[in-house]
Image (tube, rainbow, N blue to C red; front, side, top):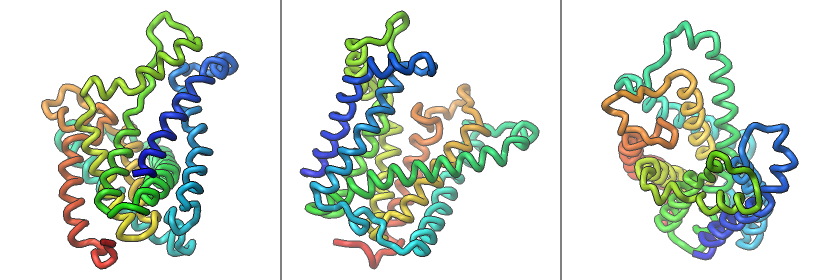
Amino acid sequence: MRAFFLFIGLILLALFLSAAVNYPLFTLIQESTDKGPHKLITIVGKLFAIPGFIWILYRLGIANKRDLGYQLSKPAFLAELLRGLGMGLALLGLLAVVLSFLDIRPVRSWDVIAPELGKIILVALITGLIIGFIEETFFRGGLFAGIRQSHGFWTSAILSSLFYAWMHFINPPALPAGESASFANSFWILSHTFDDYANGGIWDGFIALFLLGMYLALIRERTGNIAYVIGVHAGMVAVIKGFKDIAPTNHSSDLIWLISDYDRTIGLLSAAGMAIHLIVTYYTWRKPKMAN
């Protein structure tokens, strides 16, 4: 459990340090941005986490290509990444089709979409690849490898997936109307960063992300690297990003409860589909490579 708690401590410390420097930093940049100090806490917190992440890797003895999942040759890595990208696009593409068919996310008219379609696809793919590389290096690279050192697959998969889902609902809120940036208000923001958990409206998104984390952990275990995982993650993010631009949410739909407030794409429907896909993958996909 040491690795798991080291990573939790890293995130909490990064958020605290970000809140501590939030007011002077925001004072310096406020004239050049229209974003509030709560956004700065998230951005700076990620920057503070980078050196801490590297320190943990060395502390756990996993600061190498093999443990982080980058040991494949460049051609093999690229081939696996592209296979994963295809799978990610297919999985979330199917979800997008179903959501459109159910009129939960109806697609805009072709005349509206066509002029921007190329740009939408390109931006979605680039965004997906960037997020895929960064998040998978952290979650299925360092975090999973750190836990896997001293625990079996299922413990490692469950803990890393809980952490993965937990991270998505760390949400520093905007200051109340009339309040301005200050040292005290920076820590007010920090104190309410986990309010989404108290409000109880995140459970459907949390379950969906947890099951996705389990699926990605299974792929990580079966392949022994993170190339395919990065591809899957990138493909999924690309669909979510592109789908957002071409298919707005129909808030009057009677089936709106099938998607979560998190991104209006994942939710109970995607969780059910991922649970089925996870089971099928576990029993059929590259099974001989599964570690005990």
